[in-house]
Image (cartoon, rainbow, N blue to C red; front, side):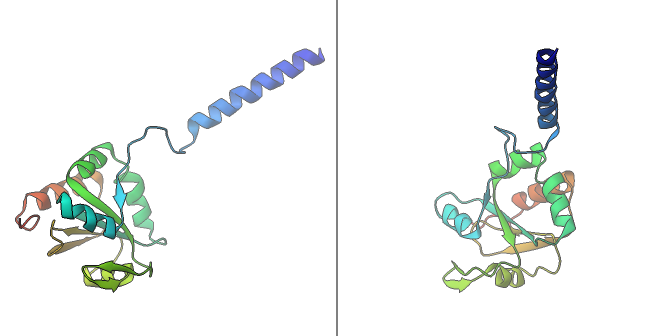
Amino acid sequence: MMKVKKIVFTSAIILLSGLLTSFTDGDKKGEVKINWLTIEEALELSKTDPKVIFVDVYTNWCGWCKVMDRKTFANDEVIQYVNEHYYAVKMNAEDNRKFEFKGRQTNNAELTQIFRVSGFPTIVLINDEFSQFTPSPGFKGPEDFLKMLASFKGSNLASTR
């Protein structure tokens, strides 16, 4: 009788752990995500393979930024379009780590001001030469975000080469 209870208990634990694992949102193996870069990496890649850049300017305390991460940046169509046509930069507006940008020392907080960011989240669209930028504040769902990216990519602001 004790052996049967042990087998039933072990089987229940295995079944329960399998069920719990299937309901978690942990990293899924093989899941495709946006290839997020730093601004420095995007600058470097642009030298050899010019692409339009979009910067997701966020803060850790911004609720709508988190919603955009979950809803917009996790959307399969958004991921595919961004990875194919854009360099995507994730930039915490409150990060004061110094780096070189276009020949001068700066940080994310200073770039946030240069990019005219007035609220969070803000998407900043930058042409492939880093010479023109367009801030677009506020939450954008997947459909609106894709329309914005496609519109900017097709404009003369996107590329001056």
